Structures are given as structure tokens and as C-alpha cells.
Amino acid sequence: MKPLSWPLFILLLAVAAIFEIRTTPDLPPLVASHFDYANQANGFMSRDGYLRFMLIMTVGLPLGLVTLLAAMYSRAPYLKIPNAEYWLNPARMAQTRERLTTHTVWLGCLLVTSMAYVHWMLVDANHVQPPLLSSSAFKIGAALFLGGIAVWMAAFALMFSVRSR
Image (cartoon, rainbow, N blue to C red; front, side):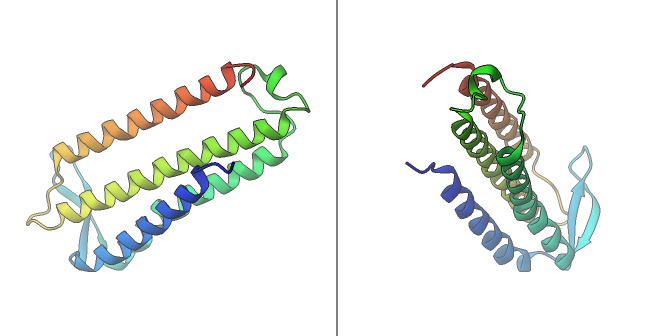
């Protein structure tokens, strides 16, 4: 059975790109893109520059990370994982590489989703004058991202802590 992670990752990349491309024209010509501790805008970009930057961060970065790590996992002679003597046994190496790649794709899904959320927050912030970032939306997004990273790390440890499944 093929893992769900790859189709979901590709779908998220496409949806996020479309979301950013369709919502950026509604932004002002000079987009507030950076905010200080008081949630006040203190950095600006052109709308076109903002769109290019967000597409790189939302699509390019996760896609590049997943591609690079998947390539590394497919060729690395040694991988530092829990219970390495078990999981790096030649009889299990293909399964181990598949698990690592799939787990990396889940990280890519988290990154795409998080960056699309950042874009949504910035679109919302730029709809008021002067631009103002929502403190509660930022805190919720940060908590969800950190929680997602914690779950991702725990899943990695659990995935390789068990000797056989």
C-alpha cells in the first residue's frame, strides 16, 4: 500500500500555491511583510516580490527539503537512527529508507501548511490600516506548528524504537 503522505504533500503544494496566487492581488502594492513585538508593521515588500518570496517559502522550501532528504536517504550508507543495528540490516534497509522518506514528506506537509497559514495571517494583517498582525492568530499558529513538530519528532522516535512491526 502506497503511503498517503506523497499525494497529500503534492495536493497541499498545489492548494497552497493557488491560494497564494489568488489572494495576493488583493494586497496593497506595498505589502506589510514583517511585524515587531507589538504586531506593528516594520518591514514592507512589493506585492510581486512578496508573492515570489511566499511561493519560494511555501512551495520551494518544503519541496527542496523533501527532495534533498529523499535523495540522501536513498543513497546514504549510514543513517543515525535508534536501533540502527536492527533497522540498517541489509534485509530491512529498503523498508528503513521508505520510512525515513515518508516521515520527511510528513514534515513537508507541516511546512507547507504552516507557511500557507502565515500567508493568510499576512493577508488579514494587510486588510487594516495601519497593517496589524493578529496576536491571537500568531500565537495559535506558533502553538500548532510547535505541536506538529513535537508530534513529528515523537513519531520518529517511536517508529524506530520498536524492533519489528
